[in-house]
Every structure is written in structure tokens, then in C-alpha cells.
Length: 181
Image (tube, rainbow, N blue to C red):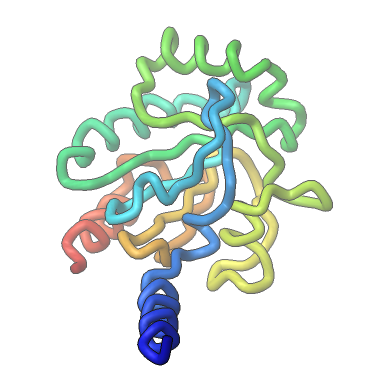
């Protein structure tokens, strides 16, 4: 029995050492409705983007897909989160959004269920990304705001809507994150 306590303590310490970040731990649903979390992408660099189908920035879907195709074999995941909080620019159902993204832009990167990114009903993922404890705190200003998440689940950067997927600034940050151990 004396041996059990040290083993239990050691197991607790080891599991604490591998605790995930609030970004990776937040429960989310795929666009098909399956519950998951970004922890399924742990060890990869993740670009989280709030998206909309009827926005001036909607064309960024094509750039996000190109970015994903260019870097996915090196460990990048683009994660799209539809949001209807900005002038109702994402009114569709999850099924309609998925069809639009596939048919119009050939999106193959993971898309998730529609969520709220600001306000009282802000999704826990966005509380982790932009809440008061985030290094990049502050309300999301518009669709296609991007957060770069490191392999360990730490938030590395925030890029506002006008920073396009092909911008040197974003590509440089992604390449640095992919190169980090």
C-alpha cells in the first residue's frame, strides 16, 4: 500500500505535465455535428478562422484552402468556424455552409459548427483565444480574424481580417511555428 501513493502522485504529476491548453481542450462540434476538440490536432500548427459566406472577405476561403494545401504535409491545420455575429453574414445552416464551402471554394480543411465569437454566448474556444486571459485579448472585430496556435496549443498570433492568407506576414508566422520544436 505504501507504494501506491507514490505511484498515484507520480501519475498525477505526469498527467499535469502534459495538460493541454484551453484552446485545445474546448469542446467543439464538427460541421457535421460530431463532438470533438482541437486536441485532435495536437502537435500541429492550427490556424483558427471565424468565417462567413456572405462577407467581403469570403474570397479568403480560396486563400485559406491554398494555404492548407501548401502546408498541411508540414503540419498545418486550418480550422474554420462559421459565425453569424457580423451583420448576419453567415445565415445558413451547417449543412448549407458545408455545401457552399465545398462547391464554391473546394474547401478540404476542417470546418466546425457555427458559433459565437463575442458577447455573452461567446464559445469557450473564443474565450480562450480572445478573452481577458489571452495574450491577444479583445473582441473579434469582423469575419476572417485569424489566430495562430502552436504545436503545444499556445496562442502565437492574431491576424485581423485584412491580413490575407497569402500575406507574407501570416506565411512567415506559420513557417516559424512549423519550424519550432
